[in-house]
Image: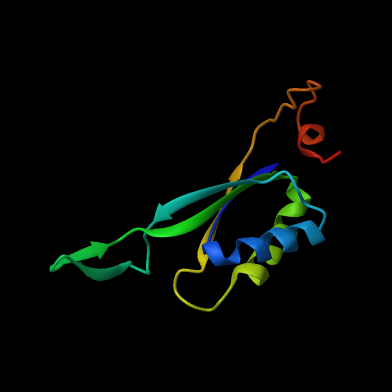
Length: 115
């Protein structure tokens, strides 16, 4: 199993959610976050002083999928989230040793499969 942490532009959230739904993937967690990277934010003048906004709003999507689903999820997210501009986001993939479905006690792959 793999955990995917996906960082995207806020305006791409609905497109990504719909794309994941089309490949029958659910069980995602979404957080509104602030971050900085290559975009480097912007500058504004507030009450005559220059203010540097380094952190931009982003969406973080977290999901755990079976190993055989990883490439399909990556391709789907990239196609839905890409604008071709700096700041489109990133996907981080890490190994998940185990999972437990609290309601049933199921472990491993059966704990992350949808009903």
